[in-house]
Amino acid sequence: MLVFVDESGDPGLEVERGASKLFHIGMVIFTDRDEALMCDKRIDQLREDLGLCAEFEFHFNKLRKDLRVKFLDAVVPYNWFYLVITVNKKKLYSQGFKFAKSFYKYAVKLVFLNASQYLQSATVVFDGRDSRRFQRQLATYLRQQINIGESRKIAKVKVQKSHRNNLLQLADMVVGSMARAYRKEKEDRKVYRRIIAHRELRSQLWPK
Figure 1 (spheres, rainbow, N blue to C red):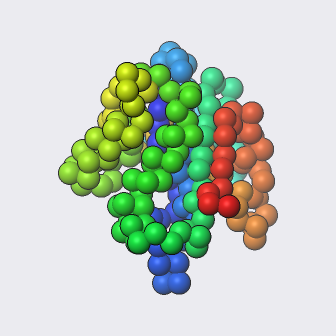
Figure 2 (cartoon, rainbow, N blue to C red; figure 1 turned 30 degrees about the horizontal axis):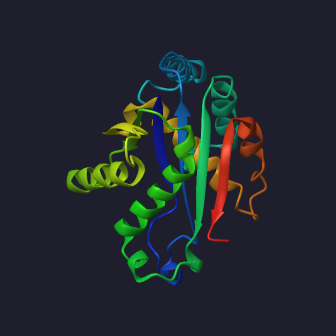
Figure 3 (cartoon, rainbow, N blue to C red; figure 1 turned 90 degrees about the vertical axis):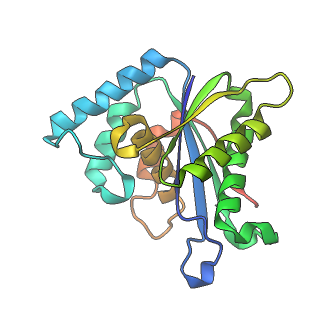
């Protein structure tokens, strides 16, 4: 089992000073590695079909609407599923949440707890944006919180660069699609979630 994790928004809690009101974190789950490989190759082929360079990164917030739709249409036939938690930061009052990294770790824990019933010996891949020290701390924290008793929900935790990993880019596109669904002022807010809706295991706004 392969799991790819990404987020949209920022982990800062100072909304009045420009931090995002919502923080979205989600995962894309492949239960079959061969299916993941086929989806990976399809994304490579999509670049070629669109006349894009081999190093082009599909990043939701940097793409035009038509490219977002083409990407999602290309990958949705493959057998993967997603789960997303949206955190309403205005309703968080604990002092611990004022620290961005503590908040991020807790948000990661939330999404994995929600996905726990679907996970088994998963290799989890995060985008490698943070320091190596924090990445190690996150991996240890996640195993401690999710692998309880004899369960082995998480087998490995890896960190890779999204521009080199098509399936991290898929996670970015999925979480970006869910984040856009909360933007009531955007005319395309329902377009992308509609395409991937049948791949959804769960989405949650927390706290309500």
